[in-house]
View (cartoon, helix red, strand yellow):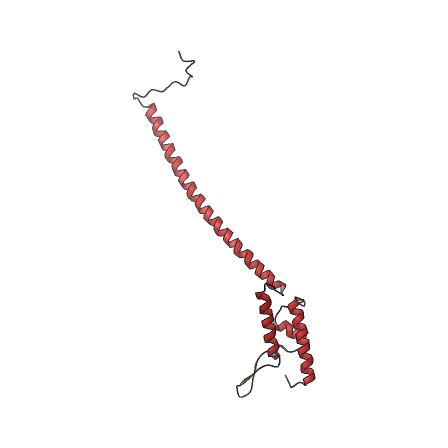
Length: 160
């Protein structure tokens, strides 16, 4: 990027500030995000103007609009801290993350409940099997020759 005049720099800074205000209000272009790339394209300046530059001797100098990039990031962070998200996609991602966490919690609860029900079923089947064996044993004892007599099933009023 070559040197620009003071007037052009002022116009660019005004365009950047106007684009910054639009993006932070949530007025995003189709396919755009609330980031430096979209800010640069909306303002009509090269994105590299927001970043530090290196001289040929290796020393670093700030980019011509680096202070505006920092201001944009500060304002964006302040909005996020306040609970406002200007980018609807970011808000949707956050909602989906929360929904995903809630679904994972429900799934863990269901898994625990299923495990508990499986354990209960196994204990119930074991008890039923034990009761069945006891009934079989008692039937065999009843049918065997012993001093056990079967009681009449007739009501007492009919028995004479």
